[in-house]
Image 1 (tube, helix red, strand yellow):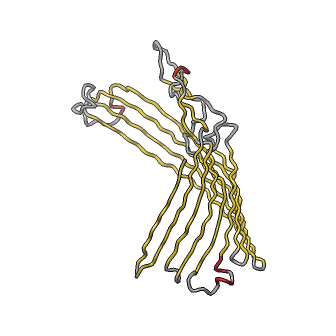
Image 2 (spheres, one colour):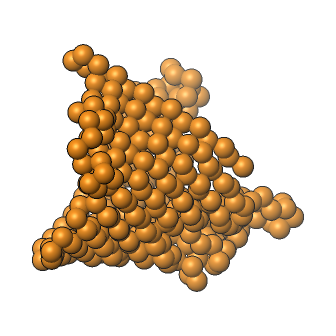
Image 3 (tube, helix red, strand yellow):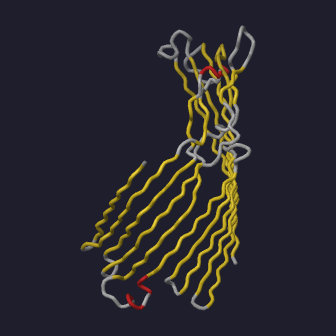
Length: 304
């Protein structure tokens, strides 16, 4: 058994200053203007993997257990000012008037664990299965976690006696797989109820509702079934594969418009809405001609 872990921290800092003198269009009429911003991205990642390998007779078994956690925090501060005594002054404390200032903090967390098993008998009958449990802070409080299983099987025909000594195929395998995957490609706060500040009324600070909460927002899921062959011919000078696949995606993550009469500034809500199917054939071919390879790739896909 082998156990490996990795803890990784990274800090990325960026600073930007945009200065326009009073002779430029942007600074004209205000004796020069300047905008400054500072951004810091703190990323923390923790990965753990344990593997176990066992061979008994003609069989072999590989087990992999893993855990991963990632958190990213982005902090930004901005400030703007105008009216500089001299164009050579480039810091905001030289501005006679600070016209705007602000800041944001953006945080996202992912966590997951998985188990994978690979079994082979006589190097010709192959079976694999896996299951993942993933969680993301981007989703609603009731739907942050998703379970994603997968299974696959393969048969290496060139390991069988009836193809062992043929002069055409060096390698021939048929395979099939069936699995579920998840997508969390949305904004960090798209499931939250948000308010927007800076909406003053009659000189009194105020705020407005910016986005509706959706506590039921969950992972977008894709269920894929595929099957095909992999081959190598003529002393491996010709290599390729032919694959047929069907991919059904449901609970699509979409921004759905809502009426302006709700009073929501953004007038959208992120929902799991709709589904889509992709299906088709994929064919790849790699041929060694003379000294260099000739590579081709063809595909046919239907979407609805």
